[in-house]
Amino acid sequence: MHEHVLIANWAMRQSFADYLDVPALVERAARELAEVRGRGVATIVDLTPINLGRDVHVLRQVAERSGVQIVAATGFYWTEEPWMEAWDHETLVRYLVRDIEEGIQDTEARAGIIKCATDRYGLSDLNRKLLEVTARAHRRTGVPISTHTSVAHRTGLLQQDVFEAEGVDLSRVVIGHCGDSEDLAYLEQILRRGSTIGMDRFGVDIILPTKQRVATIAELCKRGFAGQMVLSHDASCHIDFFPRELVEKAVPHWNFLHIPDDVVPALAAAGVSEAQIHEMTTLNPRRIFERQGAY
Ligand SMILES: [Zn+2]
Image (cartoon, protein in one colour):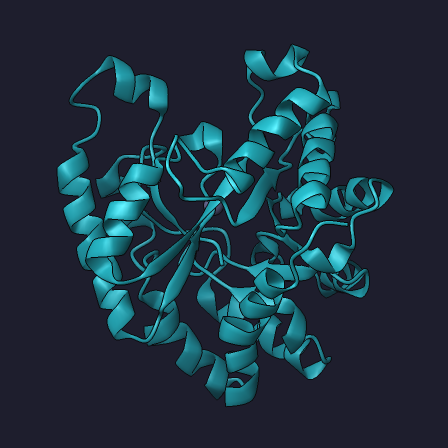
């Protein structure tokens, strides 16, 4: 429910031809996803927003070659950008709605989910506007919302506040990066308002090791929340935030195979039933996408 094929700055790609080797990336990504397909993963959600370098042409090629269906996203990341500041809500909403109803980058590939993000600056004026824009595009089109949060700043709850004020049914929202937290009181507060939580950074052991992520999920399953969690890595085939060698060294398990190979057996060993694993990997995602229709 939260992965990335490609995160790479568009301005850098446009300015320097060797910033990204697209054919090599497509080949490697297709190989990696074909391997995931072999583990039984039929679909991934690529949650790359517009301003982190979403490239639907790359996504289509990788989907076709790997046999993995990729759901593309629309939406804006949390980093503040000059061009966002002056535009009014409606202008920004119309861009998102165009991605959802007509297609991305002049293709007929339509966005299936809206990404938004609130990080360490919390609800700045601009961030509030972006969350409201997300809510309005969601209400107009019916596609679900999935977010990026900072658990240290408890921004999941702030996002729910804004969405609620905009009349969003919070059960249509995935509050992301909740898997970085072991604070069960915080997580339950989000869950009790009806949202699904993204346990979505498996492999990023420098934030929280797999063992603790698994223990949190097992406990929440015991408390009856298996129907409101989804599992992901937030991994990428290519991300230009960090040098590749650094990533491989710092977070060696941060790849698409970690959940099928290591996490699912660890969840089973922690007492999570096969039915609950099926809920978190298949039934919950299906429910999130099936309940479409504008308000
Ligand atoms: Zn992500």
